[in-house]
Amino acid sequence: MDKKNINQKKRKVLLAGTIIIILIIIGIVLISTLSQNTKKPKEESNQNQGSNQESYVEEIEEGIKINKSTKLNEVKEVEGLQISNIQLTTEGGMTTLLADVKNNSGAKTEVKQVEITLIREDGSEIAKITGIINELEVGATTQLNISTTSDYVEAYDFLVSVK
Image (cartoon, rainbow, N blue to C red):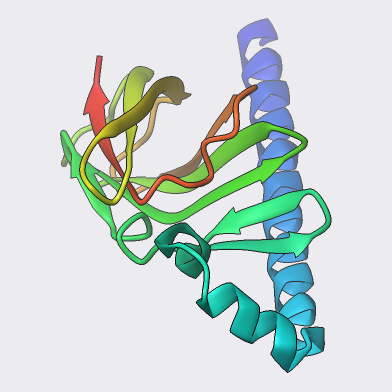
């Protein structure tokens, strides 16, 4: 019974954490939408004259940037794990990568350590960051949440590998 209670508590904590993360993502999307709707045309034309980075990195609020690269947002697959809904943001010099991970492998997976290689548009490497994907039942989805104390929001794409 003790193991059942502990497992139930772990599931409740994981569910609560997932709900909080989803609410944060919804908040960021809403802020982004509101920010886009209130931008002055002059600001938009100034951004279009900037570098390529500005075309996919947007400041949604003072000090908060979100990466809108279509390449970064493409669904990735590694060892039967599908990585989607990818979001790369930075605030105060801290970068966070959030993504949904779905188990399409056909078997329950164990906890896995993944290495994310952030790359620039020219293909050069920016940095490598690591994260953990919790064990997953077949068809189940969890959230990958990796944070680092450096500003890597300018990444154009990323590669993922299981360590």
